[in-house]
Length: 363
Image 1 (spheres, helix red, strand yellow):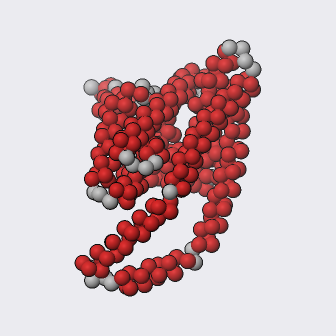
Image 2 (cartoon, rainbow, N blue to C red):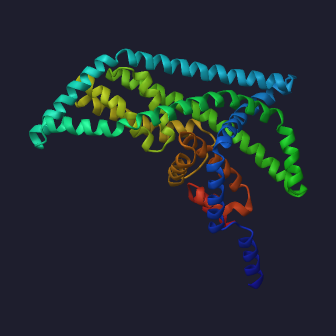
């Protein structure tokens, strides 16, 4: 009996506690916040290198030089992203060309709303206009800071567009050097396990990204077909924006549906078309959650929804929009590592989605 107790105590002492996890979380958050200028491009570059690594490896096995293989992989990714950007810009320009008509309908809808408020809430049109003028006056002083912030963001984005491919190429080129560094840090008896974890993490993330791209393509296509059948203008643009925003659980699809719902209501002046948009998005979302995602993504990140929402919120606080996108895959990678590391079973339990994690943690 005492021997079993000592064994259990030894197992528990080797595991990281919730308090330790919180302490490390606070410390890492401080480092990430103050170092975001460096860490954001490095993080994007590392994730890109994860995606491109299997392609580079395959080209190198075929006898191609490493530098040439990296250049080809980056070129293929650049062409794909450029094609996506061109399609979106084409859709946006088409939407912008009809803005005057939409603007007139918005003004008409605004006048009707103003009349309704004046008749039912005893808030006259003159009072409404004065209220709007006060808002415009109070926010006028924020225009210059907004413009300067926008200019700064655009300049940073331009620099990142140049730096990220360079970082990705260098990470892929010096990957063996990083492996040797890890060998110098960790004991030799643990190095084989670490190597297996790294290989499995890279391949799992690569397969996950492939699956998610297929999910976005299928969901975007189904959304677009449904909106086209309903007769909503710019169905492809709205359909794929809704598809991409599904990476934010629940909230993303709600935000994405606001614009097509508004356009449907303004275009047809009927409540049934916005209801139709909601029905299409809800049906496609159901298919995505229960059929498309399980079929297309063979290796899930398996992070529970509560943690996902918290991570997105924390990512937005620390890194802005980039953090909302980047923190999810990194937590997924941490979950993969935690599942295969005995001392991190508590963390795996915290991040997990099912009772299977609990069963594993008891072994």
